[in-house]
Image (cartoon, rainbow, N blue to C red):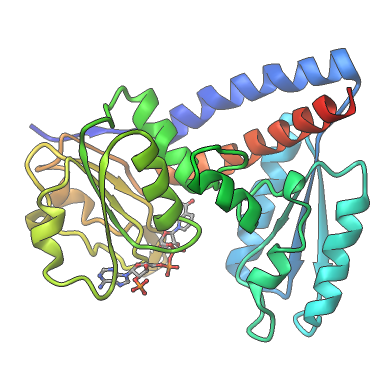
Length: 286
Ligand code: NDP
């Protein structure tokens, strides 16, 4: 039987309604409208698209959005200065630095200058540390969105064998921590993993965050596994995932499509983190 298609768009729409209700309450009770600032350096076309999508979602929801643009030639210090101005701006509740940054800039250094209470991407070492010890503050958006897909699709995580392919700081690593928090038995694979298919075939929940088109083939998937495809790869003007969708859907019990799977969740979790940052500020000021 072909797999159930996990509809990320529908799940994101559901969360969007919940966020709208929270935003109305923030406005009516406290007269506050959250503000999200994006620092965008250079003119990377993919980054332009992502920033536009985030801005559109903000305007759909009634969140103020600001884009602080800097030229490709901006120095690390100039970018840090822009971040620090946003840290001090009380109309800004959340700050993200759009990645990738130009090669001459160390993203970790820049991110470490974001006020952790405005770090809605959840990349600041302080927030990463809180998550590591199981006291989540801001959780990175893509991993948080994947957990929402599993939960809202009633897919049990506890006790399951989860295999994550990819160990980046924005997807693979934080996701492995979240799955561990939820009592999965987690294996993280990467480019030096030996005999990857023998490991992926053990997964009840298999997550592909590799960045290689149709990398996960049907023979790498256990019958009945849940497959989450994080990949966004451009092939002949088409966006495809890291999973060979057509073949794998015949083996898996459930699978996310690309597009329309994990992607919509990433954007909506950013909005949710921005609302959370706003509420945390209100609590601190009471
Ligand atoms: P990175 O390039 O930072 O990480 C890729 C990971 O895959 C690395 O850990 C790498 O291993 C591993 N890898 C590469 N080749 C192999 C291989 N042959 N076998 C096993 N592992 C391998 O990518 P990201 O984590 O940032 O993103 C992954 C994908 O998800 C991309 O397609 C990206 O576009 C997409 N993405 C989608 C989002 C969404 O909202 N849907 C959000 C963020 C990302 P090693 O560490 O050893 O190099």
